[in-house]
Amino acid sequence: MFGKQIRLFRLAGFDVMLDLSWIFIALLVSWTLASGYFPEIYPGLAPLTYWSMGIVGAAGLFLSIILHELSHSLVARRFDIPIKGITLFIFGGVAHMEKEPPTARSELLMAIAGPIASLVLAVSFYLLASVARAAGLGEAITGVAGYLALINLVVAIFNMVPAFPLDGGRVYRAWLWGRLGDLNEATRRASSAGQTFGLILIALGVVSLFSGNLIGGLWWGLIGLFLHSASRASYAQLQAHVLLEAEPVSRIMTKNPVTAPGDISLRELVDNYVYGSFHECFPVMEDEKPVGVIGVADLRELDRTEWEKRRVFDTMRPLSRANVIGPEENAETALRAMREGGTSRLLVVKDGRLLGIVALRDIMRLMELKQSLG
Ligand SMILES: [Zn+2]
Image 1: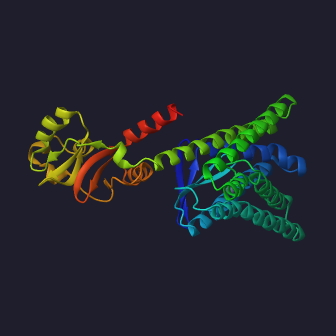
Image 2: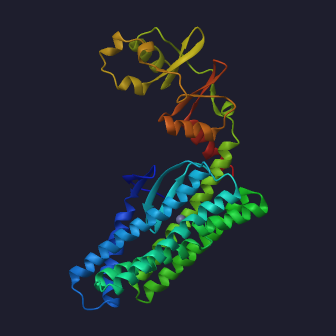
Image 3: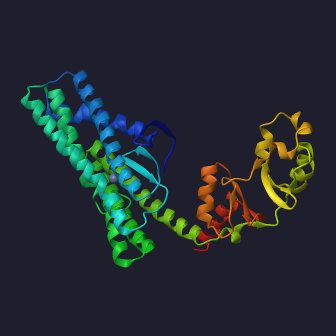
């Protein structure tokens, strides 16, 4: 769903990211405002004024959406749900939750926080426009404030449509969840409502296009497409989550992995272990106990002349929370640990004993198999 992203700044401890699709949207918004919306409502201004209004309007929309997402994130933080960052794209933003909300009530409060922020913004911009008008400020200023009041109202209303993963869909899911007591089923229903709504928007877009409303048609079509794919993706994500959570590490790990002693040279490691076993990563042992881990990636960073001089002990990464997991932990936890530690393999250790090694590739393979078997 997301393409390339750039980090803009930090706000209240959250990274604000920009998906590159938003640049296209920002241009489309500025253009729509400068060539259509403002000239129609405030005729007779200079083209440069319309373009300035369009760009300031798009920037205001951008800030409004950040505040909308920020309020979701602040409520999430109160419920101890880690938020990785906020990404802006297409018709809004996404606050990246690291896990599902713990209860239906927390989901409800989190979901409703965004539309409430948008409503507050709508009222604030409306008051600003009124004050500006009373103070005799020009149409350029009152016009932009008026537009921001309107668009925030639209964002609040649009997001309350019960189509998952829009905020209204989350409220709907929270309600179903509370009633059925089953998050999976609640998500399935809310997501299918979201997909249906996406299809309706696409159909509306096509009808608009054929009736000559190019810009409107394009907008509805884009939003519909986005919503349709986002609904499907969120359900798939939850299924993956349920699936991974049910799978203990001990079942997917490779048992009795090839290990390497610590006192051999890196050259010996390459010749006898890397080429001898075709593995990329080796637990390093001392007195039959794991003490560290060394991988092909660690060797790549070194000059080849170092391979003769250095021993495995000098180069390995010592055992730490970043590369060890317990056998009773689940695959979801393993995946998160890999993401956080920037690694693709974890040693499975219990009471100081090495039981196996679990690789990102194995987890992916497991998901593929489970999905292909339904
Ligand atoms: Zn929202």
